[in-house]
Length: 180
Image (tube, rainbow, N blue to C red; front, side, top):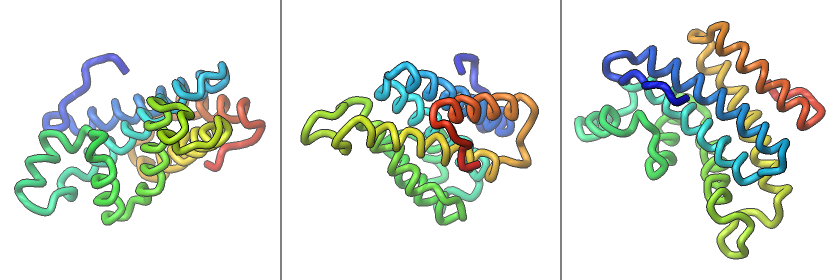
């Protein structure tokens, strides 16, 4: 999503909506790239989709994320963006709030390393491309499932149309229905 993003302080609902749309668009791009054989690019898009998803979750729960004033300042200044270096800790905090995201964040971060390191021996978490592709498909499936579960009260027709497109792309790629 290349348009101007509303600030979380002034328009939290708008910010969440934009991040959810970004998530769905990135999932679609991930699958399209995977279809063309670009697994590392696909992994990057799947990671960006997950990061947008986490950012939307943080914004949704912004008033519950922090435990003290220092954390409050960080979440309102930077944390709502779900920066890569804070993604694990943010996910752990979201898990404390009842969102099951830690394991999926670990998969997303592993894919993020794959984007930059490929299958380079000693720097890759994957023995072969198929392992990475399986994680990409798992991340797309999990993100789709959690989108509807955690944002059902914010769902609209535009999101549903994008969601269905991603589901169809996934079905075309895997030959089966997603886990959603």
